[in-house]
Image (tube, rainbow over all chains, first blue to last red; front, side, top):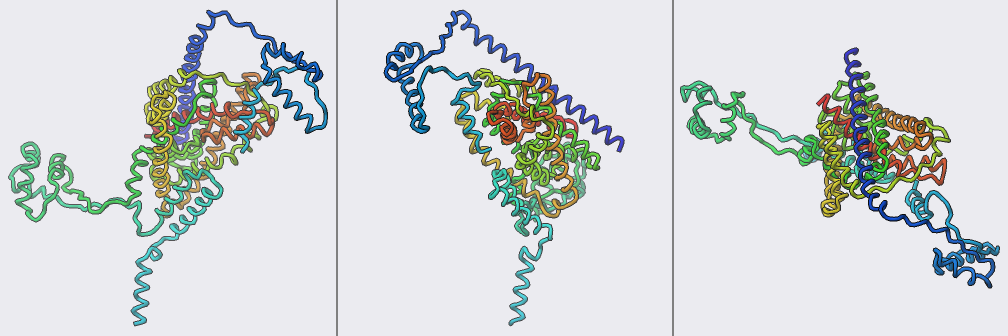
Length: 129
Length: 443
């Protein structure tokens, strides 16, 4: 039994060392290759002047009477009239459902870690669990 | 007349399968029906459990001979007469006579027999025992299909299909996942020790231990190389436990982690370029095969399948291995592995030991992955959720889904699925490497 245990010990140590060694080598190679690919991909971009980030479009709509006047110039900054109209319609439909009136003061991108559509897609794909 | 009728009926009964069955065969048919129920009603790994279960039924039916080996007729080769007739020694005959010359001599001696003279000539050449195995009866259908298992052909072909279906992107984006895939192989080696302590010989202990890799084709491949007589119980145990991953893993994951650790939200993975995805299978196949040639059949085919997928230039081949080929091989593999579970050989204490050790291997693999996940949690100052470690046991994609499910229970907004896919596919490579180590040592 001592011999068997000795063999088992050797197999355990050899097995774990080899498995970890092979996979660590792969980690290094993939990491190095990833770096090389990333540097090649980024190279042309560095030569170009990076565009300045646009400020978040702010749309204010305090009352329907002034909405048009307020929306149009700001919508040109980033959001089209159609998008503003869709968002306004969504808010209006919510007003109908809840019975509470809402006014749009500004439209700003919510700062969540994951885009809403991506989150919705993930949720849909993992819902069976 | 009535007596004659009774005798006929009795003869029919005795000649039917009912008259020749052993009780073990009936029990195996019952077990197969339970497995069919699990596959069809409970949908536990139906793609494999269903053919395995039906193969078990076929193998335990009497007189059908589905797994029957071909029989040979032993025919004596008259070497002494050959020596007498030629007046030469066997060595001289070997050196100077051609096959045709021997045919002439033998025909003259035994004009009534016309055997395969090249075989006789080979026997003379090799100075073998003067017998020739003349095939008398062909084997059963499943016997011939089983050769694909016995010769280690089906598991690598299954890996070809798996490779074409697998997206290694999460692993390439976060190569550290490889460590979790390696840690989850702990179950294999700890179980090897357990099997040795239970007095299993080394080759059998290695075959049992590989169940901990939670990878059916790998388990079958290793067992076919090291302990083919144990193929039935090991395959059934491996696939049964893979189907039970959602039941076996969560309690271990919860036991070994705190609520805070389970709630960790991991940052999104970086996008992976097509070039990286193409280079990955080539790189892995070369590196692993150079370091561990015995793992080449599994890893090589896995990576070939993945290259079919990622290269984008052989879409037809990719689709074929993902669908038609893997489906055909799955049928052959499942039915023939099930057919090895014959009642007389399957139902014994050893099988109970295999089933118990298989469960132990699964649990140890899960624990190894989660514990290494905890180490990574500490090392990265809380950026890695240890739950993804349990996915390192392969069982793609079920183990990754379990990580997702357990993580989402703690934090409904937490999506670990893609993070868990990294260790999950690393586990496939890890278990193939572990299989290569065991074959290299005991093969």
